[in-house]
Length: 382
Length: 77
Ligand SMILES: [Zn+2]
Image (cartoon, rainbow over all chains, first blue to last red; front, side, top):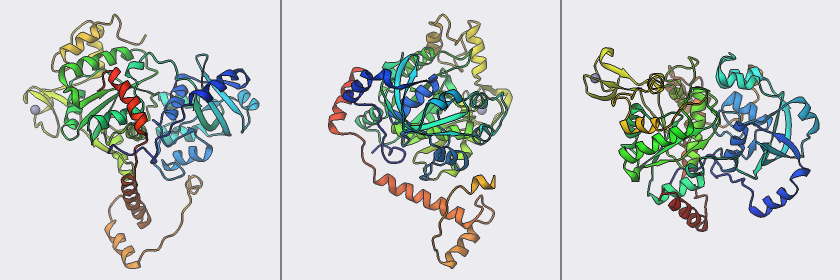
């Protein structure tokens, strides 16, 4: 039996074809609300149960409860507000009880059944979720750029937001069937937003020693300039899996989601999403979901102590590195040698090498992976 | 901050005073600030465990067949 969905029931708010057709016929009669990519992905994740038990954008009680207690009003762990903001002008033309059509890139994505429109305190939002109000933090900047009101209510998905990676997209109900068919009783989830180097591979394989299956689940979504492109990350993982993983013990599929960079709180959220995909375990490494120096390197591991009822088991790892004396990839738990022997995996260093056309050394990255990256004329986000 | 914290509602359950004293002793020099904190922690852990035992698959056999076809077409199975 695969892990139980968060809250006990996998949410499904994808409209069945008949109702969907009827709504699409009347689409022009709905009040229209344009949403950004991150909110479109949130609506998608709500509808397919990635955010179970959420059925919509949060109401005020849920929002405040998440800020203050890191739990939903029904006591379930939940650390990241899933909210939809609107400006004053929009708030003036919408009322509780209305059905609003959410558009992303001119496509009607979902119907929002408006239950509540409320004002909120951005500073408190930032302080609680990001532990800082520094506008240099991308998550804080995002909150302060949001509209004055939040609009809450259930959503019904009409269309998936445009998806260039359909082939790599599995929904929680599908991964659950997949894990079951493969006979996996225990599955460890791995969150990533980068091309794999050997540090990632050892992290995954160390976990895989103890469980039946590995679920590699890259986050696809808005990226910063200079990050690896999504298609590059997927192509690199394909090659890595084909060459270095037993076919029957690993699965690669994506989740579309906008990173919040909320460090410890976001690590819990990432774990909940993977629990809904059917994982029983979740890998938490160094500086999970962090940015800059806002969080301690292992703070995202410590926060799990506060959630004995999370329903997914975190696996904590210290940072891996290559030790020339050991002649292996190790971490400080197993290698006694000093820093002069150690080659640290650095995403920045790898990006620099690739940008200047140099192949990273084999202690850093599998040659096949490097080759796959070099197949792209420009592997980076412009 | 206080006002924020008090939004959460609490209720009282009774435990034997002897058990209360035992817990009070146990949580000295730990991260638990009070017996209530400890009891809440332990209960959440146990309740979640029991809830997990009562789980059921979120799909019908019909869903499973359709999904298996898709997974095969994509090379996952
Ligand atoms: Zn060593």
